[in-house]
Length: 235
Ligand code: UDP
Image 1 (cartoon, protein in one colour):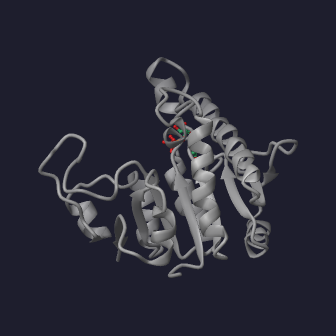
Image 2: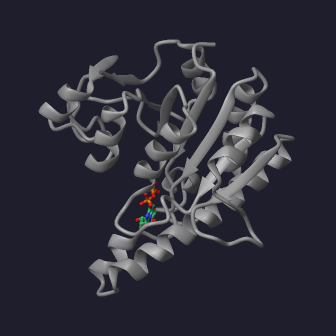
């Protein structure tokens, strides 16, 4: 295995499966099996989960809601997704802990960095909910922040496309995929990998990002084993 400790970022939308909204239990169960295959190899795994399948602060603000209020709703949405993911992982006999950036003690542990690391060392999967705990941020920023804090070797961004392309492969048939790309080239070419705050945080801390197709069975394990799957962003 190439990586020992990884941070997996899953968007809220990934949990929808083929639905338009909410959580697809079948998709969750599939992800649990993918995650199990990695945990069974002794890899330490932390997960940051998004909330876009339930609520996004910007969407609320575009309809006249106060942005901060909307972001609070979005952060709570990530806790809901975290609970659903925790449940699916436990059904697959994986030990987990959910830590939230917003205090919600009856439901999840508060985020405590040292405790999170201890859980990982004991082989538990740690799910980070509540984003960064601050409005105006995204769960991509939370993913990079937590990855740096727990000293993860790499951040894996599980998506529905198999990497970074010259343009959007869902719209442009001529688009070609990069196997490797530098942080600088992503910025120069104006490619979308993560929002700018998250991306530059990763660059400044020399934390590589791998974008890969999470919906293809076996892919997560291949990425962790160091096989050439997806696109790796490095210095
Ligand atoms: N959010 C926030 N602060 C954070 C992370 C998330 O306010 O640190 C809110 C924000 O409103 C965002 C929503 O939570 O739109 C859901 O997160 P995100 O859009 O990143 O989820 P994803 O796109 O990964 O599903």
